[in-house]
Image (tube, rainbow, N blue to C red; front, side):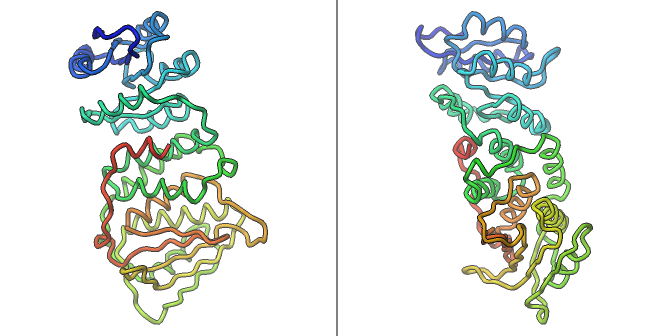
Length: 339
């Protein structure tokens, strides 16, 4: 523990690697009052003594006997005023999402750390006041998933932000999918890869939609007389089409109408796919959040595309040349800004 003023909030870091604890204390002890523990049990013992002064708990996930997630859940229940952070490798993304669902963490930090970013995060965590958000338990898994994929796929921040913009009302949000659905989504995207080098015409896209298992709707190609080509990631496109099929069926539209057409969105030529996701009705309706819906948003924005909502329909617009669409890079602290 670094000696600081008596009223300064402590940061408790938990890791079973002695060297990691020394490294944390050496780097961050210059800026914060720190405590370290080499196990969940030791951390719990320290909390009994210092809980009134601990402002932030950061824990590694992989530890013997009891995992970091166990500690996060304990602190959530016993010391809800403490801001909770999980640090883990990307390969343990499932643990991060578990922590969001069960431990209600403030952030997760991937290893190896970016020292300056972690320093800023710890400053923000000390100033953060935990508040119960009606929809945070739903939003956070989506934001965590996108953060984990941001290094490989373009537009992750924009995808989550737009999803929230389209469905801002917490009362319309269904309970979050379980962890396995998010992991399946991440694995599906990673297996598809991030390349966008497959050429597909609107006629080929129409045929693929019609041949997708479970699709029983009608597809109209408004430009069937002209061979319009778009560059896409074919596997990701096929996965997004299956996801749209499932969203429509889950919303009570087993036979959706789909329209394909050429559309220029300044200044880029592209293709618009309008998909019926809700039954036609005069009453206000809202598609529920789901991992499948998230996949569609990630797919569209990775390709430099756009999604627009019009009553019971969703239009996914894709540029003919996605690499010509400039996508902003990662924005500092975007994860906590979203959630």
